[in-house]
Length: 165
Image (cartoon, rainbow, N blue to C red):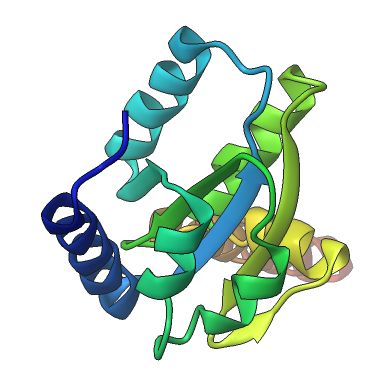
């Protein structure tokens, strides 16, 4: 069933608003993926602040016009599934990468971060980028290790000093 022009305008407007707020976007071919799998992916995306849509290509191209994601327009072909990361730039890429590992039919076509179309290597780097909480946790662990190392060094120096005196 064809969409009426009013509904098309609403879809374009909604996606354009998300495009203006999002930190990054990633698109993939979702052909031959079951609806249940897509719904599971959307559910996990909502938990990490990723907004996902399956939209007609012409509507998507119109929606991303004059946004930082306009460079994706050449990659939009076939069945397109787009995810916008709103809280952390790498969350959409991480979700799609993990989903791609489980589903051979799901293929990532491209991603944009800071207005730049990313290569496959850069998409992997974006997906591996730690979240704020993960980065703080790594910093705390490193600081604990350093503090423990200094304590051990100090205790061994005290022990050596007592043995020599």
